[in-house]
Image (cartoon, rainbow, N blue to C red; front, top):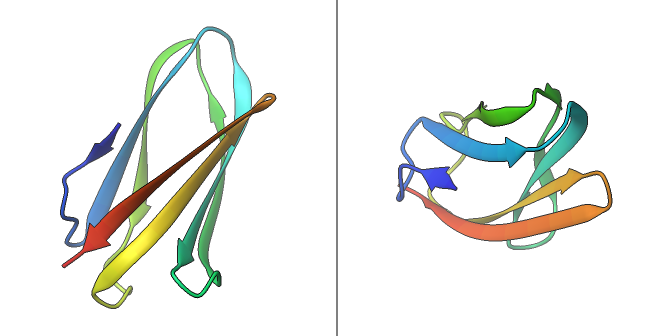
Length: 79
């Protein structure tokens, strides 16, 4: 899940994992340009990853989350 929506300075990505694994998070603007990339190690259970959005301009963005063989994508709005 993503919180808060719309986002101001910090986006919290909440992910559940049934094992310890690596995750790659990419944030794209609507032109497809990567504006931020984060690589983290997830622990078993619920994980929270903070994405600093304070330097991003207002508008719509796409976040892509890759873990194991799974890719999740979601749009969010930056105020």
